[in-house]
Amino acid sequence: EQQASKQAQQRAVLPRAKEEEGGGPRDWGHPSIAMQRHAVLSRLITGAAGLRRRRQTPSASVSPSLFSSSSKRLDHPDERRASASRASTSAPSAPRYVLGIETSCDDTAAAVVSESGEVLGESILSSVDLQAKFGGVVPNLARQAHEDAIDGVVAEALHAAQLEPPDLSGVAVTIGPGLSLCLKVGVLKAREVAHLGGCPLIPVHHMEAHALVARALAAASSYDDDPSSSAQPAPAFPFLALLVSGGHNLLVLVEGLGVYKILGTTLDDAVGEAYDKVARLLGLDLSRGGGPAVEELALSGDAEAHAFPVPLKNSRDKAKNCDFSFAGLKTSVRTAVERTIGIG
Image (cartoon, rainbow, N blue to C red; front, side, top):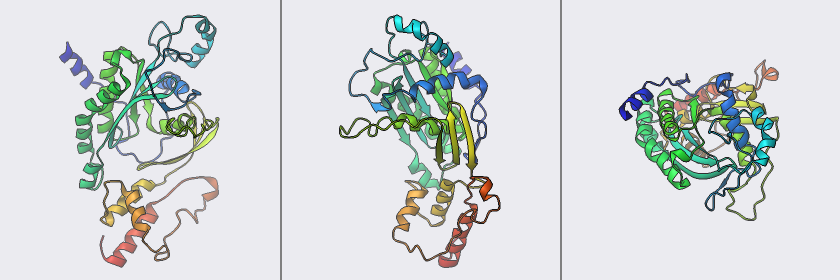
């Protein structure tokens, strides 16, 4: 039976995702998964407790449940509101916990979060050394690194939270955008844990999570480690989010859960990609990423030595959009390097 179950998991169809983390997605979700995703996010990112680390064993006292009291089925927000009066008079339910898994690119990560927003256990394993060796992310090697690490990372997060799969109320996993070979590793592991725990599998859009995490982080400024720090209120909808990563540059108006308006995106390269390519061109150490390597070198450089162009400064459409462009700047740097030190 275990072998048959494993074969069934291997035959799972991974939702379509971009092979490369380039460009900006215009459609951030599918209606068939919106109910599950938003039910989870609405509780995890709007809780007054915010995101904080647990200092003791979880308390049995919890805020209104994300899940129905009779099962681990995800409730739609409207259903939860309709049943609020009934829930208030019933006996308190057991705490609910969600395991999150992320394998979209080079880091293998997992965390267990309570419905109040507490991070109960987490684990992350980075493959930056592997990237540095080959000058960037190699999809097949990154996939192998995820496969080697995923079991241990998930087990460590669950152990730190003092939980087992049957204790979970849901398993959330990144389904894209990202490297499809890497995403598949996380999805298969999430399916396995959800099957063992008998709980829902919750697909999460990578960029949506980045945009919404500000509401979770704002409620606590330092994970409760600094008693003198004061919590900041979560940004109210609508708010503006700038998402900058190795493969994305997005300026997004976040109007609500599942409601996003992309005001601008990269027309070619993302800034992270441009940094990585410049760092490789200069032969810098990529173990911490191209951005930190270029920044460290720039601290001892001459800001007036080269006149690099400002992207889209003279664009005729500048007043009509908020897009980004870094390909021209990257090409100018290459030309300056070849002209100055003769490498390319």
